[in-house]
Image (cartoon, rainbow, N blue to C red):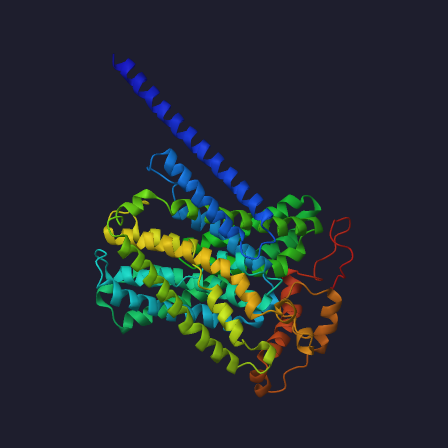
Length: 541
C-alpha cells in the first residue's frame, strides 16, 4: 500500500509539473506572437507622425490584458509574472549597451559636461523636489502608512527618465543635438536614480543628518567613477584580446561571441560589485565601438552592428508590451478600488511634481551651460530647452522596476499605501508614455520647423571639421587631414575659452600615440594575409 501511495503521489506531482510546463509554453508562445504583432503594426505605422512602437506595444499590451481578464473572469491580465531579474539582468543590458555602441560619440562628448550636469545634478534637484513634495502632501492624505524611506524612494523612482522612451521618440539622425542631450542625460539619470534608490535602502534614515547627505554624495561619486572605469577596462580588454589573437583568421563567430560576452560580463561584474551597471555597459559600448569594432573582420562588423540593434529593439518592445498588460493587474487595483478619487489625486500630484522637478533644473542648468559656450551654435536655445524638458517627462520600465522593488514582496502588494504607489506608478508610466510620447514629435516639428537643416546636420563651419572627437563616422582621409590641422592650445586662457578644441587636440594625440597602437581601432589593425578584413582601409603602422 505504501508503494502504491508513493507511486500515486509521484504521478500526481509529475502531472502538476507537466501542466505547469504546458501553461508556461503556451504563455511564451502567445507572448512571442504578440511581439511579432507589435513589429508588424509598428512597420505599418512607420510613417505616422504621432505613433511610435513603444505606444503600439503599450496599446497591444492593454488590449491583450483586457482579453485575458475576460477569459480568466477577472483573475489575471498578464501572461508572464513581472520579475526584476528579468528586467535588470536580461532586458536592460542590450538596450543600454546598444545605445553606447550606436551613439554618435562626437555629439555625446561635445556635450558631455552639459549631459553630466543634467544627469547628475539635475537628477538630484528633481529627486529633492519630488521627495519633499511627497512628504508634505501625501502625509496629509489618507493613503496608508508610508515611512521616510518610502518617500525618498518615491523621489528616486519618479526622477528617473526613461531612456527607452527617449530612443523611441527622438531620432539620432534627425535631431542629433537633442538626442545626445536627452538620451545622454537619460543614461546618467538612470544610473543616478538607481544609485539614489539603493542608497535610500542601504542607509539608516531614522537619524537623517548632514553626515548622511555627505555619505550619499560621496557614494554617488565613487559609484560613477568606478562604474565608468569598469566599462572602459572591459571594452579595452575585448579590443586587446581580439587584436592580438585575431579570431577572424579561423572563425568570425568567435570574435562576435567575445564582443557579446565581454559586454554582458561587464554588466554582471558591475551588478556583482554593487556598482552602476547601466553606466558600466554604456561606456563599454562606447569603447567597443571605438576600438574593438574596428579589430574584427568586415563581415563581423556588419553582423555585430545589426545583432546589437536587433537585441535592443526586441527588449524595448518586450518591456512596453508587458507594462501594457501589467497595467490591468486586478490584484493591485483591488486595494484602491474603494477610493478611485484618491488614486487619481495621487497620480496627478506625482505628475505635477515630475513637471515641476524637471523644469527646476532644465532651464537653470541650460542657462549655466550657455554661459560657458562662446559659439551660438553650441548654445541651447529656449525652444530646444522646452523640447528637452518635454521629452524627458516620460517614465517607463525603470520606474516600474524600482516601484515593484520598493512596494511589493515577490510581486504581491499587501499594504494599502504600497498599492496606491504601485497603481500610481502604472498610471504615470502609461499617461506619460502615451500622452507625452504622442505629442513629442509634433512639438519638435512645431518648435523647430527647420530641424532637419539646423539641428540634424552638423554646422558647416571650420569647427565642425576640426572636432571629430571620438566619432566613428569619419573617413580615414578626413582624419589624416584633420589631425595635423588642429592648432595646439597656446595658453591656459585658450584652453578655458575653447575646451572642446583643446581636449580633442590632446586626446587625439594621446589616442594615436598610445591607445590605438595597443588596442587597435580604425587604421591601426595589423593586416593578416588572407584575412577577410577590409583591404581598402589604409594600415597605419
